[in-house]
Image 1 (cartoon, rainbow, N blue to C red):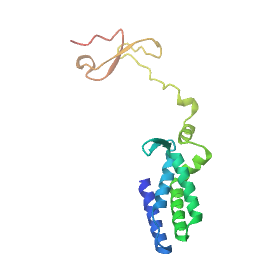
Image 2 (tube, rainbow, N blue to C red):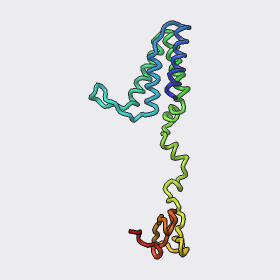
Image 3 (cartoon, rainbow, N blue to C red):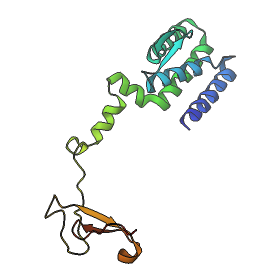
Image 4 (cartoon, rainbow, N blue to C red):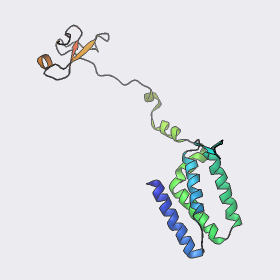
Length: 171
């Protein structure tokens, strides 16, 4: 949905620039999409000319530099198209770009939401209780339990028994 919205807003903006200032291409919108991809997945690696591995973040940086260079070297219509592409990029990916500039990654932001002391804490287990005698694993942590679901003894319902009251399965 985000990519569709990105291209819809960018295409409408580029179309408006074309009507107002003269013919332009959608290459700046595609360049903005490459920068957005590089901001979202900077460590993604592609093979340039099927041989040379390169990370997408470097392609995004090169694209941004070329976009800035073209902004200062081109005419008014091209400048307007570049402004539309950059505005579209900032509108839909501004938060990610801002976080990347600050050096905050998505994993760091997610780890800040989780309390550090509870992240690796074991989940407390409910004490197991024998259905026949009432002994529990809270009182005797080493007590072993078995689960039965037979029709005769348990009525098909999962029932826990301590090792003393558990019978071998019916043959």
